[in-house]
Amino acid sequence: MSSKPANPASPLYEQVKAHILARIGSGLWPSDRRIPSENELVEDLGISRMTINRALRELTAEGVLKRVQGVGTFIAPPKARGDLLELNDIAGEIRARGQDHRADVILLERIPLPPDLRPAFTATPLEEVFHSVIVHREGGTAMQLEERYVNPALVPDYGDQDFTKTTPYEHLVRATPVTELEHVITAIAADDRVAHLLEIPPGAPCLLLERRTWTGDQVATVNTLIYVGERYSLGGRRGR
Amino acid sequence: MSSKPANPASPLYEQVKAHILARIGSGLWPSDRRIPSENELVEDLGISRMTINRALRELTAEGVLKRVQGVGTFIAPPKARGDLLELNDIAGEIRARGQDHRADVILLERIPLPPDLRPAFTATPLEEVFHSVIVHREGGTAMQLEERYVNPALVPDYGDQDFTKTTPYEHLVRATPVTELEHVITAIAADDRVAHLLEIPPGAPCLLLERRTWTGDQVATVNTLIYVGERYSLGGRRGR
DNA sequence: GTCGATTGATTGTATATACAATCATAGACA
DNA sequence: TGTCTATGATTGTATATACAATCAATCGAC
Image: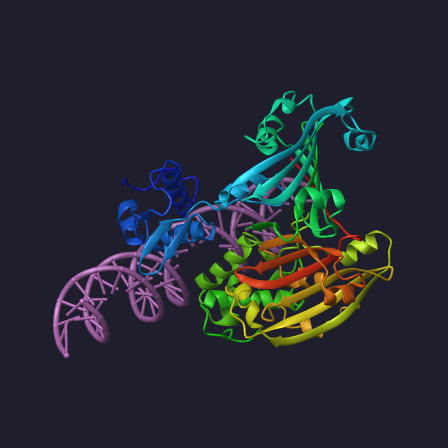
């Protein structure tokens, strides 16, 4: 390795961090790779060990590295992402669990905007919307009932999709980049329709997630997602 | 101020952090207060300046302190929050609706750490925790059952609070600046205990929010919040 | 009274040095 | 072959020292 990192405008410890991040970013140091020890970096970079230590310690605190006393310093695997406020890709989640995902398309059609949805689309007056109802299954067991109303101006081909092969999520994420999002979560008891579609007893507790997304200044989607309480939870983590 | 902080089981810089967090938690050092300078803390605690500096630097990175070169070190104000992922102040929400808030304190005690909570506090081994159970009412109607386990090292006076006058939320926001947060949300059917405390029929759908917060590298609180599905929902909005 | 320079206080960074703690490996011995 | 101990490598912490950079207050000149 070469001598002192360049860019004297920032402190040395920051330069060491940048040096390491560049090696990670370039793929030179992939996940789980052991990097040179502190003393090796002292030789390589001609910087004091305490400065190296600070850089490595901060990258460790930031989740970029993991260190084992007596052993060495390793590139940490990328963090699993998942946040309540993000769009939920139930198919992806199910597959990530090594389970078989299946989508039962109950309905997919273009309809006149129902009067009770007018308030939701006030900002984006429409005559018609796409309406889809899909049950997502994990290993055959119903997990989520998804009902969506989609703005055809943004996704003209929504109605042509085969949602047994792809999912609305996958399609919408590409077609309607989310610039704003609002949601409400509560718990409901499954009524007869929901209980039937999700194959649970009437009255069983379900998580109801209502969500509206915008792309630019247009309402893109209005979604009602119902999860079987016993089979699903939403989680997230937020930190420094 | 007295001499070296106690508890030699942890490194000095951690002890200094705990020492400072205890002063914040006790209300001795409120928001925006300037704390003693590094050199003053060197005198007060008889520890090297580099060790003090490390403690203060880490608390700054964690959002607990803010530092101004040439001026001093200050207690950072609690961050403005207003998001699903943030702490929910049910009392504040109820009052904001112009409704009367009341807290029924079912229990508030200091207990040995229950074995089933050990995993939650793995990162912060404790012998004891504070345990509180409170029912929050809006205009007399039960809305939320709140159960909390609180780290006494961070909030030594938690057990002395009158939570009919203030709320755990108000107290904890001050005492345990949240530097990391994780949660799980799901829907449950109220069991007999919950149904009794929330005055709802057994089996009624409730939103279950389980949350764990960290202050610095210590687990601060482990919370179980149960909301009556029919009476409460959690919402949020996110934009660019 | 205003402006600029100086001073003192404080935080910020870097280095050298020392010792502690942990881990993995190699070697010795039964 | 299995166990135990010693060794070397590595990270972890603590201290002392030095200089840099920034801020606020004070002082002096105009």
